[in-house]
Length: 440
Image 1: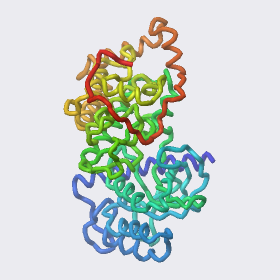
Image 2: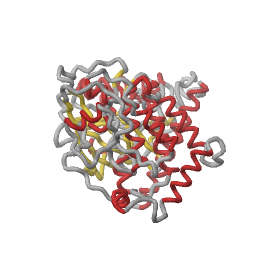
Image 3: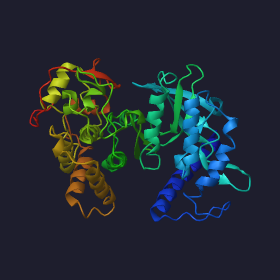
Image 4: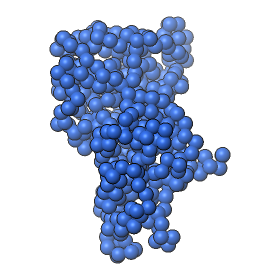
């Protein structure tokens, strides 16, 4: 067991290195020559035309049982310019140690081991695919996808556009749950679970160094989504996952939509889909979802990382909360846990006026600068002075009152507080305004 785990760890590291090399060489446009056809490679160790032939030779060796999915997978293989654009059909029996992780608004999620691993490149000597073996993966089952194939593939297609981007969970392939016949997405596994799970396990123990990196990497992931002219539409701490305790990755790809996409499912009664505490007030009011609404959600997430507590965990998530949010109520910022510069940025993100919120690019640049100044702390001395004071005060008796200490080590969620994505419909909400001096 130990040797298999260590082997997986090595393979995961190699996979990350491969992705970094692919991105670096993509920037320089230099991939070398293909050993088969002597033409210029289209990706790192990848020749699109030769590899398309290798894939095509195997088309009659597999089937998903669904012609639409077969064509979708085959098209990805024929058009792939690098290994990260490849999608595979993976028979369910190729996975072992499948374990239930949880259920969300869209379906069920499992962890599994995949001995084969995803494709790396073609091996000219063995005449077969070289792979990243012994991979831990997530299998995400989408409810009723057997009857909603087009919707299922739309989700995967959006994800595949982002596969080579950093801090986005990559998609490797498609499989099928033999018990339900629902199709499943095969994705990268994150070792520490969701951001909410990670914060729960580390209440009171997280320093601001790791917190900054969690926020920084999530900001970079969101920036990569937005620069691709997409919105996420359902950012919350359940679909940001943590790997190796330091980096966050954005997942739940079914929510990504083009910036100008008008949802066909949105009815006349202002129904939206998401987790209420993270939904922007203008979206609750009935306005079109924009990238600025993602920024609002990100502000809620920033404060969740800072406080380590879920937003509005101690009150019902109902019409009254939606009304309060539209009137400017926001989660309380714990000033004694949160550096002022970060507190100010949180408030900008959840401003009721979308046009005044920062962009994902601005957040990406700000947190990148703060985090990379961690070693010498020369460019932002005031930030690091505030962080040092916070970290020191955590060990003192007068840091907070006893009730606050209990909340930091454990908390009780109200029985009507819901953190699973669901349909939200609130009529007669007031037009969003700010009320920054009144916080709940």
